[in-house]
Image 1 (cartoon, rainbow, N blue to C red):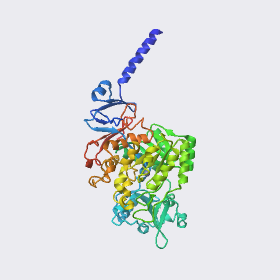
Image 2 (image 1 turned 60 degrees about the vertical axis):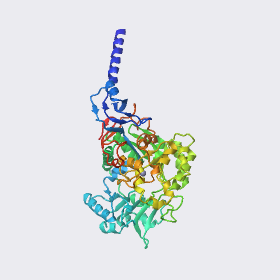
Image 3 (image 1 turned 90 degrees about the horizontal axis):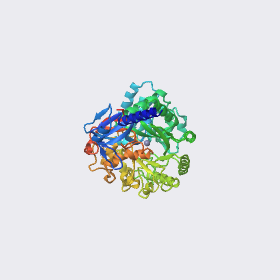
Image 4 (image 1 turned 90 degrees about the vertical axis):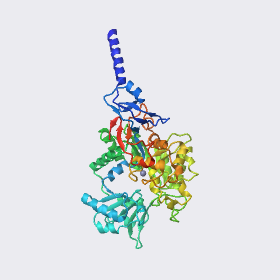
Length: 544
Ligand SMILES: [Zn+2]
């Protein structure tokens, strides 16, 4: 008996030694930006069971580990998988089927695209599209329904502005909504009327729902298709974790089931859209946490957008006296939500663009966040924050979740809306970072492009794709490259309570990583946007 035991022990020790050396994957001869605490650069690592098991030099890793899968990267740069701290992954996927109006230069161009789109999908019950921005047109007036009615007298049309906070519709769509003509005033929204009192077809914020709720439901096949198409495109730009800023219970459960079948490998941190139904659901169910899905937060809308003058400002718009925008709900409503989420142990994330909204939300948060708390409540966008409200982020450990490309998309007209010196309190990413020592970076796609390197470029250069303006817009709020890379990896992970499992290349974390052609830490600023991702890995498996 003793002999057998000794033999058994010997075998166990042998097998564990042999197992210690085995890796599923070894990468060496790479420029590995680990994004650990010291921002160390390594050249090699080993992966087993989807996690990093060793990180170091080529000599160390090649001596200590062996694998059937050893890759020499010839010095290529490698980073932790990119994280988008605020996006609309599912909505982006659904939109891939809609008419893409991003970058259109006139309303006439939109009409042409819609006609082509109709030829491609002649049987769809509605024509949907999005991405237009009248600020990019020669004629910057909002368009009206008339031309849409001429071309599409019978098919309902709804085309949203690039920020999703305004939309144009036609009479065929409006005729489906009996409510529409009786409703002149919309809480938290606006219907535009012409001189005769007819709706022009332009809707802002909550008014859009008067029409959008008549869009027929997606089929299950369409929904799955949307998620898988979105995943494919996002892997191709190096994203391995995405924060989806607002989904319903059905979609969350669909994602969970696609994770379980292995079809969906994009890691998602999902904010729940707070309806009474979803709040009750998660009160009963509690948080969801798997390797691929994390649900423990709600997304609340405080106001609209700056472009459509829906952002709620403390003082009037500089280019629209008498108008200071509006809160979408009353402060009491937001306060009640804060109390509910605090009781549930869920994170509260509130969309706040205008400085008045930032103030209202920061003050409500401060009532529920004790000093030294680790609840990580976030202000989404934190786009305009007055100087006196800025320190509240540090005081109550509130995380700013910002989108650098919004700064470089809005810089052409933000000064018109806000005027000097108020515009200096907008898109203050460096000031926001300084409050807490962290900031989460995202894109808000499909409002902006899905490519996180566009955001990286905007954050460090404060310039557009044409490298304008020279020296960068409001350059005092540039982030360093190290800060920007942390913002789209470890700090974004922190804002998701996931900094112990991802966001850096360290032992024990998920082996999610990205390789690029050029080195984004050293390439010329003008090369950052067109730097190509060559490979993306999730859990040690190549996904792009
Ligand atoms: Zn958003």
